[in-house]
Image (cartoon, rainbow, N blue to C red):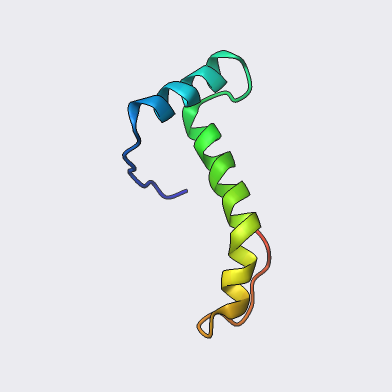
Length: 61
């Protein structure tokens, strides 16, 4: 797995930490990975279909 760095407003970090504290996710990183997967599953297919650079996609994110 690769690592990236992002900057978020304090309010968003607090909400992510609350999700962890409530037991929804084991870590903040896992909550962010989940959010990215959901975003890409909703928007990524359209971008891939419209892209001339991508010829195939196996659906694993």
